[in-house]
Length: 501
Image 1 (cartoon, helix red, strand yellow):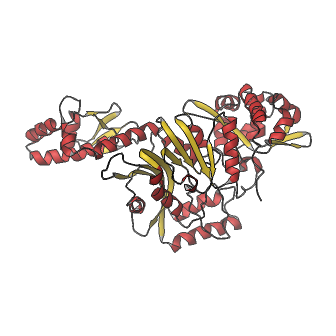
Image 2: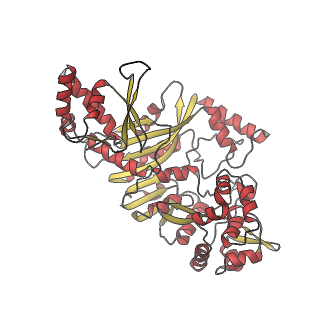
Image 3: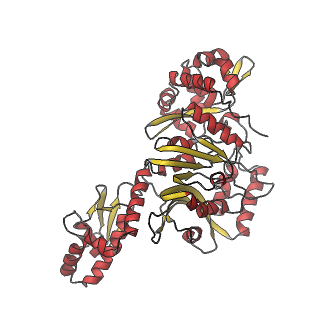
C-alpha cells in the first residue's frame, strides 16, 4: 500500500504554514521547552506516551502541533485553527498536510523542526510508525534519522561553489549544504521523495536543482566541489519474504550500490573536490574489511579516508533490519525475514558487515593518491566535520611532501593532545606511553621511547630533524634509524592533527 501523496507545492500556502510554525515556536527549542527532557528523550526512542501525557492538556500552539504532526493524534479542529491561524484548517487540508476526521483533524504527513550548524529548519516527510502504528509503506520517505544526522555531522562545512546530494530523500543533507554552497543539486530515484524535497525547499525558503534518476545518472557530465550521499546502503535479500523500502534498499545484490557509487563518484568531482558517503560493506570468509573497501578504490585515482564505525555479524544485522519499518520480532513474518537474511549472507560466505564513513577526494595534482582505512568504533567529536576537513588537509599535505620535508618542519602537539603513562605498581619505568587526542577521532597512539622523547619536545622550537639528531645522541641509537622512526610517527600523528605545523 502506498503512502499519501507529498504535500502540494503551493508557494502561498507554504508561506502561510511557515509563518504559523514560526509564530507558534514550533522549533527544536520550543518543542524541548514544551516536552521537557524526559519526554523529549522518550520520543527519540520512539516512545510517544510521555509526550502525549504532557501535551494532552497544554493549550499552547506548539503543544497542539506536536500532537498533530509528531504524535499523529487526532486533534480538535478548533485547536488546529488556533495553532495555524494564517493557514487555517482549510488551507492545511488544501496543502495536503492534514485531513479531516470527524470533528477532529489528523496529520497526513510528518512536519517537525530540525536544528544544526546554528541554523533551524522544518522537515516534512511521511508519518513514521510512531504516528501510524503500522509498518511503513515500500515508498516511505524518511525524515530525520540516525544515518542522516551521522552524515551531516561528518560533512566538512567549507564554502563551495557547487554541491550535490545523491539520493536526497526529503532533503535533509541539502538543507545543510545550502548554508555553505552557492548552488545545490539533489537527485533521487523516488518521485515521492523528490516531491517532499521540493516542498521542504519551499518551506525553508531555499532553491535547489531537483533531478529525477538513480544515483549519479541525472548528473552525467557534471562536476561538483562537494558531493554527499546517504545512499540506500542496506544489504537486503532479493526475495518475497523481505519487503523492500525505497529509502534503504537499492535493489542490487550485496554491497554493490555503495561499491558502484565509490567507483563512479570521482568523475563528478572537481580537482580538490570531496565526496562524503555512508555505506555498508560485506566481509567474506577470513578477509579483513579493509581489503573489501580497498578493492572498490583501486584504480579510481581518488584519495580515500574510510572510517569503519560499526561491525555486526549476519545475525545482528538481520535482526536490526528485519525490525526496521515497524516489524516486531518473534512473529512469523519477522522470522521469515530473519531466515532470508541469514540465507543470503551464507550464500556469499559473509561473516561480518561493516558500517562507516567514506571520504574521497580528487587530487589537484598528478600524484599517487593516499588511502587510509581506519577501524574507529569508539566515541568521536560531534560535529566531526571540522576534524574531517582538517584531516583531509593534513593527509593531502603529507602525500605531497617528502620525508625530508617532514624533518624540516617545526612540529608541535595540538592543544587537545595529552600524554598518558601507565606503570605497573612498584615499577620504575612506564610499561605503556600513549599520546591521546581529546577531540576529532579521539585517537590514542602507543609511543616508543624514541617517539615519546620526540613528542616531549614538539613545541615548535626545533625542527624534527634537529630533534631526531639530539634524541639519537642521548639514547645512543643509530641516527638514521631514529630519523626513520620519527618520520613514521609524524606521518601517523599528523594525519589526524595530533601534531600540527
